[in-house]
Image (tube, rainbow, N blue to C red; front, top):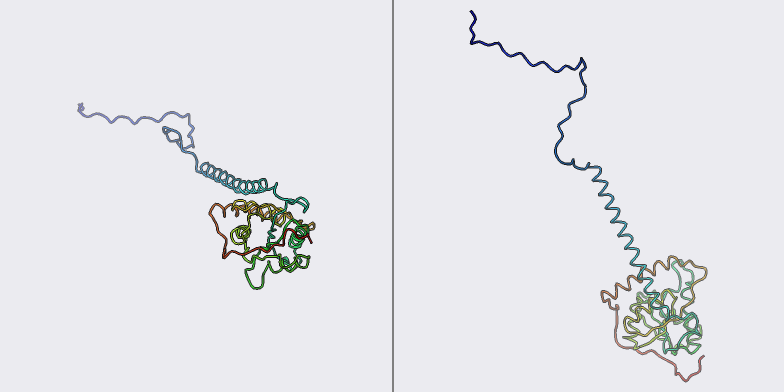
Amino acid sequence: MSDSSHTLPAAAEAPPDTGGYQSSQPALPPPSGGDAPAPAARRRHKRRRLAALAAAGLLTLAAAVPAAIDAMVTASTADAIASGVDQVEPKPVALLLGTAQRTVAGRPNQFYRARIEAAAALFHSGKVQGILVSGDNATRWYNEPIAMQKDLIAAGVPAQFITLDYAGFRTLDSVIRAKEVFGQQQVIIVSQRFHAERAIFLARHFGLDASALAAADPAEQSLLKVRAREVLARVAAVLDIVIGRDPKFLGKPETVRLRSVVDDAV
C-alpha cells in the first residue's frame, strides 16, 4: 500500500510549439517610457550649424561697420571739396598734408607731385595767402615738410609764405595743430579727395572750418589698395574721436606767414 503523503513532482512545462523552427534573432528589450535622446551625431551637427551662423553674423557685422563709416565720412564732406581751383572759396591758409616724395620702390610718388601742384596753384591764383605744410619728421633721414617746401619753392611759391609743421605725424595731428598751435580757424586742405574727406571730417570735429581742393589721383596707378587702406584709416579716425586721442605733440603757439591781401597774385 502506497504512502499517500508522498506526491510526485510536477511535470516541467513544455516549451511552446514552434513548428520545428528556431528563431536566430535576439530578443528585443522591452520598450522604455518617454522619447529616446537625440543621437550624438545630430547634436554635433546642430552645434556646428550654430557656430557657422554665429561666424557668418560676425563677418557680416565686421564688413558692415567699416562700410557704414566710410559712406558716412564721404557723404558728410562731399559738399566741401572742390575739384578745381576756380571752384575754391578763398581762405587765408592752405593746409598741405604731407606724404613721401618717393614710393617704397624708389619711384617718384605721383600723389606727392599732385599735392605740390595743387597747393602752388592755390597760392598763385590768390585763393590763399600762405601755405602750412604739415608732415612727418620722425627721423633725421625722413622729412616730409622740408621736401615739400623745396618743391613748392621750385614751383614759384616764395619761401617766406611757407610755414612748416614738423609734427604732422597723422591727419589728426595735422588738423588739431593747425588750430591749436598755428592759430588757424579755417583752412583749405590740399590732398587727394579720399584723404581730404577724412581730413575735413576730423577738422570739423575739432572745431576747424575746413574745405579742400582735391589733388589729382595718379591715372596710371590702381587705387584699389589705397582705397582699402583708407577705409581702415576712417575706422581708426572714428575710434580716435571716441577714445579722445590727442596729437603726439602740441607745443608753443607758432605763426603762419602770410602775404598781404592787397598784393597781386603771383
